[in-house]
Length: 57
Image (cartoon, rainbow, N blue to C red; front, side, top):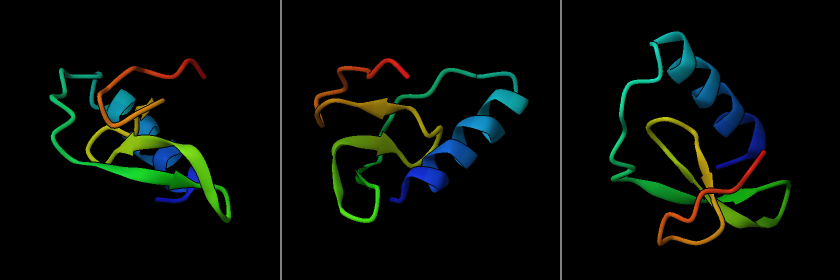
């Protein structure tokens, strides 16, 4: 998932009122190449590892 895709998902999720998400589907995040973190494909939140340590942005 590219950076802009995760950002779009986060914005859409916030517009829905930021409901709880279980982050059941995550993908590696890319900035043209692997960015070193992961993003939830449901809400767009990014993580430092696939074990759901949330990354501060």
